Length: 317
Image 1: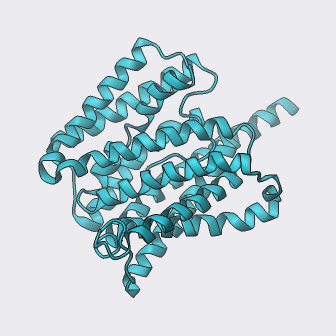
Image 2 (image 1 turned 90 degrees about the horizontal axis):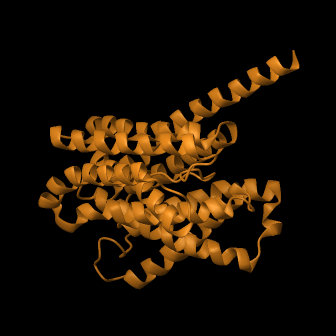
């Protein structure tokens, strides 16, 4: 009786985790929709700062309530300074992309991140990766090229920024995986927000008066403030949903659902901006998704913990 009850409760937890992750990836593209609306008048560095500010404010009461702030040390903070710098580069790169590319195309290219993470984990974490997964990585990059190539002809090197963002997130995810074994995930997200804010403020101060559409801050209009608030609030909601999803179900179970973000991003981009991928880009998207799902399947089959298993959300910025 107890065994049946325990099994039923475990199944309910996994179901709840799947539901929360589904809601998280459904909300996530709205962050990028707000960012794309804001980028017409607000520099990408300022949009990124707004996201970090809201993230830190949302995490602060939780960190105080859980008293995890008492465990903060300068030695730990060094790791979070590095993570803050990496995530700042990633987010600024991705938000800048949205000024020139559609949300769906940018997110689709960004989803080479699990492929990059697989390769980096093999090189730096010494995880065993067989030839099948390396082949899947190569196929996934080919799919990304199908999306990048026409975008490169339209916007130039900007089309490579989602790859830069994905590379940074892969490094961020590796560090998160190592640190998550000994640190509280809420405190980690709080410190990420704080150090991200610090880096953004420094960059915006250096870029002030430069005329750069990336780093020269402006006084936002009422509409732009609404968009900035939308970026921060939806990012906080998606992040919190993701945290509770990972608490309810194994990351290996949730990982395939993350690819639904490409679908939801395409729907939102079409509804708001009228953007819709052409046949070649859809082929690239399908190849990226197929190779990513294959990598996840191989990881679940041959490892107790997949490379993409991180307790902190590592999705598109």
